[in-house]
Image (cartoon, rainbow, N blue to C red; front, top):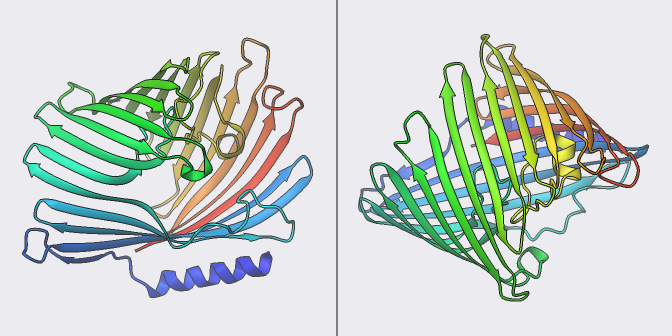
Length: 371
């Protein structure tokens, strides 16, 4: 594992100092030939895990390429995944589950046509996640979308089809999404409302979801609020408050609070990960939960940022405990297009997650190269 880590890191560092920070862009969209833009992101992730003495370590790489083609009122977009490999270390085990991805693969694609100054039509495959993907995970599906743009707001309607067998599931969902984005909402910089109505042709179930996303800057304080409520065959609701403080130069403080009802279940998926271990490996449904997490950051200089984080999960109405997580890390900018991140997190699990307490310790590191 160590030899492999050194080899991969050396190759990535070689790219840092030999390839300039740039994206490929050719032509102009208003010219007869149109324009072509290509951007890429190569990332190496490493993780060492200790779960009550059971150790595992692994590394994986991801190489994503985005291609945008524009000519007049028509825009085409394709996102390609060219590499997604997992390398198991000396300790064995891998949260990634091995190297079984079909590469190359098309992640997302669409064609967008600006029919008029205030009307856009979009067709293709992309995710429909709303706001921070707390209640909606944004899983990819085949979509047809129409957006009508006005001075005060944009109204978007989307018909979505998720076929049976999608992502290894038995879903066969038809979804109608209607979203309103306010552009002149007084002091609010974000004011969005969304409605999902979904029918599963296989099970005959019908689910619905209503979401609200607001953002309000108040001097050195940035406030944001998100709400999600279920209907149909799903129940429950959640509230989330996000507060970013910047009172002292180079220092950042984030205070966030989350609360869900005792019957809450995410409308579709749960991509939201407030912290490294709890978000990625433990949380699945956020049922009957109240959580407070704090994050402190300090910009040492233009290249280096250090930080610490704490997540405290309150005992629920049934007396179940969800535990506490603490972590610390750094982000270092090696070049304009290259970033290295390292972090350590420790999570003491409560009895509300499993039948007995389990302790998690994880070391993460990521090298990201963009062009």
